[in-house]
Length: 362
Image (tube, rainbow, N blue to C red):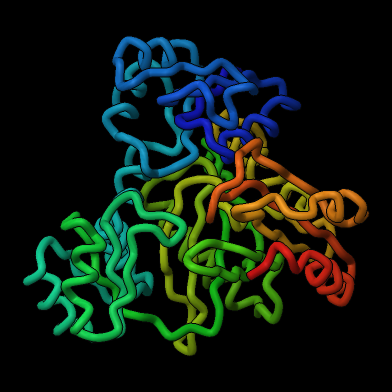
């Protein structure tokens, strides 16, 4: 089957690497043919040219995307001639933070208090209603800590609004949490649904740096609660493919932070750590193939992001239980250049491996 991907970043790259052994051919739609996936399939460089977009759609049996920050008009054009999974509904709801929060509220899924902000006066009013500290975020396109400002006092209001460049934004109340978790689910076209275990994530300056899989000291009831949130969301939007929930574990239980309608950075550990990776399962889902098992292969796993500089990669290659994944990117501050996965049968060995890679952690 010919699979089209909107975007040529590292997620598209890993989707392509998982699709190839299953006998699929890749197509990519992008603004440039110099992306990190373009060597793995035919790339259509469109520059918003509808004729090129049509050629891409005509040459793809099914189309997916690696980011929710894509133009939904392009998706709607592609839908005329090719199937798109996840659907435009999943994309529409998750590419705008207020729509996302409204969906959670509708389904009675806990999230932070929030208000839409379009002006300084809106921001002042929202702060009066929600209180401080709070986080101001652009309503669209923010990722890896970009487009965000933590407001601790009213004296920062003007600075915060300037940081948003007057773009439509959302103010979210600050959540006191014990740790950050995430859960990944995958649903097939036929409705088959599988879950990966809850994992624990550590961020630095808004960028994911370390994932521990599975998260330790997770009760069966907490896993089931996360799965119930997922179940409600997937049923509501009829999602096909991988869906990710970023969560806060608080004293009051699980609170949803964000929804991602795609393969996710906190699921990279599945490449070596699970029976079937999130990437392969996404490909299976959108091609109407049987889903693979999501069980963990080794009892303890971790993923470390390589940020900014490549670091001592030979150290990784010398270690039996550490696996290197580079994205063919040039070094740049705060740029995701690759990741390392770690598998282990003991918590002590896992921690020893993480300590061995301390150069990659802040």
